[in-house]
Image (cartoon, rainbow, N blue to C red; front, side, top):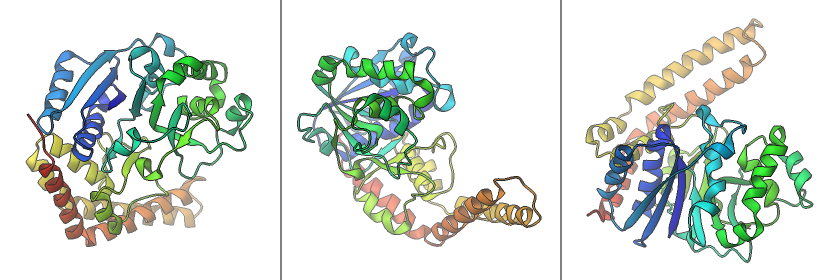
Length: 347
């Protein structure tokens, strides 16, 4: 099984959880990881690999330093990074026929065996549909594809790539051309270009392989048991990454708990089982909600004060419910750890 991801130093905690959870949740099949990076030190890479090997062997890691020359002039993504475009270089970087590309902000509780075995049905790429797509990229897809109306927009965070077909077609080179010629139309950067180039030329995988979290789609306490048992891979798609902008929400706590697990941080795991942080966050959101509501009533706070008030109210309710059910949450976290401990195949 071949798996590739792109990361800079800021995203290494995310990469540790993504690859670590793949190793913990997937079969014992040998995995060749490819790390595309823009200048990580050998010390950082060796330390990262050592962390993974403490939990499972049976994999190889090849680190590939990439040149960003072909990305100059393209828009920067979250946190002034252009590493998202690195996946478009894969056909020329690695000499394999088939590879899974995965973003480094996924917690893979379901694993990726199902991705690797997916039948592409003569299509060059396997994808998962974007959740609640609003049509923001329709213009660029319409410009470069005759099938824009029939296309089901996909998320670029998890892709199964037939590199033989992609090389033969030159389709990733075409993605760069779309980005360069229609930069302003590519609202989601290379994901926009991928959808334009592969419109109606992709094979769709189970949506639970890339379950995209955002404000309108959160996991409930009732869903947590199913998550721990491997129902889906959770994709933290917004800029509020759990290791960069952590919150006390259950799904962020789950990610951070898994990070502490792979770091062998027993104290960190114990702290994340506690409910104090969630209660304090609930109170903070309640105060912010009352303040925003008061400003709205007197016509102050700007045009978005209503949305701000609603967001704090929504967070307050979720955090309160999670605090009330923290024993259930902590028990589920412990079950996940026990499950992964049983699967431990370290050297």
